[in-house]
Every structure is written in C-alpha cells, then in structure tokens.
Amino acid sequence: QVHLVESGGGLVQAGGSLSLSCTASGSFWKINAMGWYRQAPGKQHELVATTTMSGSRVYADSVKGRCIIPRDNSKNTVSLEMNSLKSEDTAVYYCNVNVDGSCGYGMRYWGKGTLVTVST
Image (cartoon, rainbow, N blue to C red):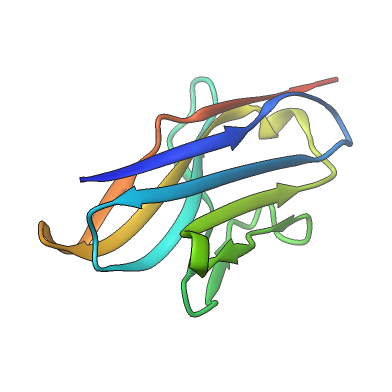
C-alpha cells in the first residue's frame, strides 16, 4: 500500500502564488513518477504537471510558464509551485504517484486532494 500526504492549498488571491507538497510512503520498490492533477467544479479531472524521478517534466498548457514541479528523490516528495493565479485555477488538487512494488509495476495511487480557491 502506498500513502500520499498532501499539504498546502487554501484561499489565495488572484495574481498570487500557491505551493503544494506531497510525500509518498509505504511499500514500494521504486517511484517512477509523481505529479499533480486537478478537478475544478463542474469540470473533468486534468493533468497539471508531472515529473519522472530522473527529471523529465510535463506541464499542462494552461500552467506553462507559471508553474514548476520540484522533486526531492531522497524524501519521496514532489511539490507544485504556481504563480499568477487565476480564478480558473480554483480546483481540488490531487497528488499522484506511479510506483513499482509487490502489487505490480506502474501502479498508480492518489492523494485525498487539497482545495485551492483563488479569490478575485
């Protein structure tokens, strides 16, 4: 079993910045990738950004240029830092991890989510 603990989020003013963090723990051999997804009210779940543990990153077009996804392999942690926030960034943000372990290869696990509300 893999556990993801997310922190950060809350109420942020438009134009401001946010910082989220996620730490993976539990039983696994290797983390392949970690990332963040979000779901805004009335909208579909979507990718925000992901990173492999070797440093390959993917960003959604909607956040490119105002978002980075640092990682700390030694702590099994990934963060999300975003600036110039807009009302459309309001969503529940979910941490995701892809691991290899006794349950299989490429298993994906999700955090419980953290709400980010951008006020205008």
